[in-house]
View (cartoon, rainbow, N blue to C red):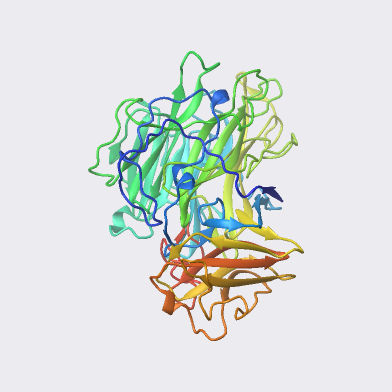
Amino acid sequence: MHFHVPVTSAAFVFFGICLASAGEVLYNGIELPDPWPPRIKQFQTADKTDPVLPHYLKKPPVVVPIDIGRQLFVDDFLIESTTLLRAFHKLQPYAGNPILKPDKPWESSGRGKELHGAFAMPFSDGVWYDPQDQLFKMWYMGGLLYSTCYATSKDGLNWEKPELDVVPGTNIVHRGNRDSNTVWLGLDEKDPQRRYKMFRFEKIPKWGLAQHFSADGIHWSKQIRRAGHAYDRTTAFYNPFRKVWCYSIKGADRRSEAPKVTRIRRYWEMKDLMTSPTWSGETSSLLWFHTDRLDPPMEGTKNRRADNYCLDAVAYESLMLGLFTIHQRETDEKLGRPKKNEIFLGFSRDGFYWDRPLREPFVAVSETASDWNWGNVQSVGGGCLIVGDKLYFYYSGRAGKGYGTDGAKDDGFLRRYGATGVGFLRRDGFASMDAGDTEGTLTSRPVTFKGKHLFVNAAAKNGQLCAEILDQQGSVIEPYSKANCEPVCADKTQIEVRWKGAKDLSALSGKTVRFRFTLRNGSLFAFWVSPEASGASHGYVAAGGPGLKASTDTVGQQ
């Protein structure tokens, strides 16, 4: 399923930025405002907030370096002009969902009589591919806020729960005192004892984020460090473009003009998890994200906007991918239906400001009462995995009364049920630039590169795509003309574009040029210039995948 939107449209949710003197220049030519991260003084109430373009879309760099990663068309950052139509694409759920269900005794445990139910689902936690063991690995919540468990898979679809020695006879790797949790696999970590990192939100003795390290993801250190005050559903992620650890902190907007306390996100970043200062009180972290008037309304209310329940993020190719859990309905105790949380997408090219051009859910709840994901769909740490030509997105969902349990009540509290599913998307397939029977063009902004081989991700099996390269004045650089281009008439996620009379693009390395793509009856998802004939993009690969060896794509065609 896909949705067409105008190429000029984009939407974002951040407020109060004041661009100051020049700061750090990023890998993509974006100059960060000073100070950084920005100090947003106050949010507007959500129903009064208009979406605003990020600063780097209002004023893009004069020249965009494209040496890191596949260049995606999720916004207009790379586009100078086009007659193509942008389409956004939704996740396709796996027919075999749920792939992980609560079927162990400890997965039906809870912390206290109110927290009762059967759960086997990441609450962020993480799903990663470990190239050392050649296994998909999942960390998830076993029982409601009871324990962190571990599962493995060879194909990402069929999962096993190994018996471990942490709690003998179970797959528990950490027991007790948790809410949401983030597990991060550092594929480039130099210290083997810190290869895995856990950020565990705890409520006892007080609310906050505890930090742990592990060499194998099974045996975890005692608490190494603890971050400041926050609310449940606080998570963490790594931004490799700036080499900082970022905390996605759940906060509350309690101002009198808000119709009800609203969930917001606050931000903190650290260069070093051991030595960098962390936040202390609730308001010492920085204001970051708030929903706006384009987000869905809170169901069953007159003037309350939906709010942000969680924001997980990961580096994918040349940008940061944001998974926004948007909260749109409270739990309906009468019907036994869980709260309505759905996952929406956002994209960032500076790691702080988010562009959210599509306000349709990427992962929606089911409207069928007997389904495992009738409510409360939540994102997973690590974001997505690259499996061949597909991206695998894992997510959790919760059922209502009568599913997975006897539907009875225990001590006056409804029994709950949570499980795990997965969905698929074409690699780079968040957005495409499309053409029909009428030929269209897309001309990039001025770019520079050090590579030699142009690649595209395109679906043009019944059409044709050609490319030419222009100089700074807009003239074609011979022999890289449309006439000399060997037409692309295929549907593949990696296709090399070649020209007659040119071995490669080495003659243009380091020069400022523009690419102009001509397309008929097809879709263009991404382009990139690789140093190798293999097509390795050297962009970030999110949570990894089979055949990938590091945090970036050094492999290309497999």
